[in-house]
Image 1 (spheres, rainbow, N blue to C red):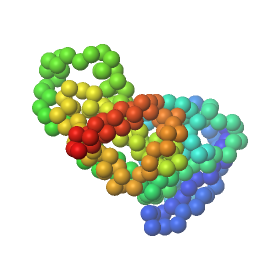
Image 2 (image 1 turned 90 degrees about the vertical axis):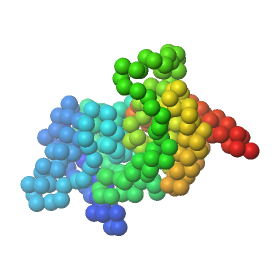
Image 3 (image 1 turned 180 degrees about the vertical axis):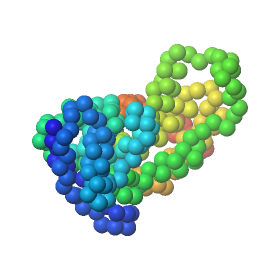
Image 4 (image 1 turned 60 degrees about the vertical axis):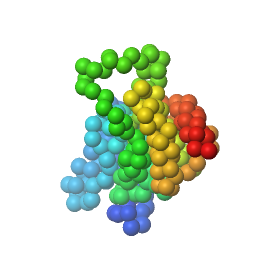
Length: 248
């Protein structure tokens, strides 16, 4: 199997970037997309060229670091999958693929396919935590939680902070990410103490980072590898409105 690649190459944050064409051959349909990039990088290294920089860690769809767009689609063509879970059988032999990093003001490119997503970390640091004592693992059943509430909290907790929602949004909004983190903690009893302060602080931090506004296009939900629902955004908006009203 052979693929033609147009890969975004950028030496540093301050450098000008451009697309560079590579031929990837000797591939098999069961290779993952990242394994294909490994093959290309092995060849580039042997030829004395600079390998393509890209992020990866678990390669199991857990960490969210394999953040790149394939033919304009965050994480590639497969629904509910990260880039490391995309296999070459999803493409045609001889197909041309354009590979680039997330495109968002709040996610500046560090090098090649690596974008700086530390803005998400700062949003979490602003309020995405619980400061009350929650006990040890054996204490988990001390506070009964209804099955419906628990499932909704788990759904929100599935967010891996990859940034695909930002990359897909026409306004580069981080609303789905922030809403998932706010909803995860706000649904649980342990998160009630700081619920109103949390949503205000995290929304303020999101705005300060330069993310755009939500325009209700649902592109974020469509590309989310964990299929987080936009219902989380509605829940966050209700919490935020309630917190603001209480201050009046």
